[in-house]
Image 1 (tube, rainbow, N blue to C red):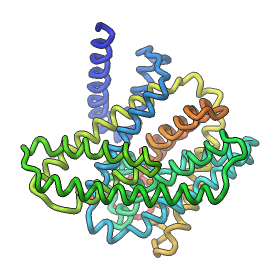
Image 2 (image 1 turned 135 degrees about the vertical axis):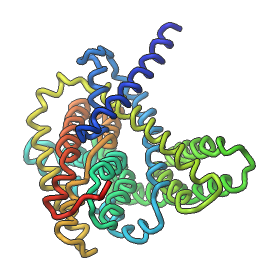
Image 3 (image 1 turned 60 degrees about the vertical axis):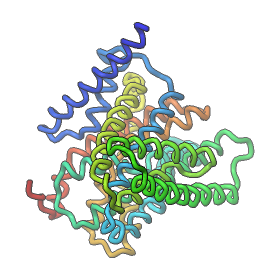
Length: 396
């Protein structure tokens, strides 16, 4: 019982420190999610906290729940105008952009580290998605006056690109752990099942939840609980039958968010609270998982992959995907720089660890390092880059 009480107290202390550190970091315009990751590292075995934590199974479970909540909240805040204005470029970046980024990073990894193509593409696949929480948080904090379609594109991309990245990661892990590899037909079938199944599950779940929110005669305080349990049910159900739970819960959020009902405002407020709690828990947990002294031998690969990702792969993918939609060069350049990495790439590297992929621990550490570099370099410079590209600042 004492151990349980100590763990509860520890969770509360870490949460309080995260909130207080967030208040302090805001004065220095530090990326808030980076602060949460660093606090997790300080609480870990190499920091003053001295907590030894390496339970990847529990981390996958908690991470899945947290991401489901974060994606639902992201969908809930999506507006009709945003969808009308940016669904084309957002969807293109979330699919073709992810594939192109993964391919370019993978090709560089083959050349730099003499890896097999499957191993190298796995690095690209886990690093390809932008992070919804990081993108939304840093865009609001930077207050750069970019055209609405650019902001809408970035937010839609970050909400929609997780299924493609999960699909590529799972497929490449199967290729590394299954004798004989995978066939093209199997890959196409899995992709269709993931995307189509996830979309259908999200639409059905979203309209079912909307019907309950409008018709169920309960106290207003119950509606956020109803939404949360529905999200977990749809996410878990979709994943269980082999479709994308990430896409499903995002679509659920969109369906509920663009429709009006009596408890709409209460649900949005509660979902924001749930979302922040999920972000804090997820980033602290991922920070605890990493052991900083093991990252030292990986510094050179981390820096090399970061340079390739930020200065080659992401810009090429962004410009290619936005070219058909007639985005200006400075709009595409800004969209490229705001493609922040966050919890999702680190979460995805748990899959190879659980799958028993060779050198998966090194992959986890390297990807963690790249995410830290992304949040540090991009998160701190969104506003200056916006000014360099000729965008003003939104008045306070």
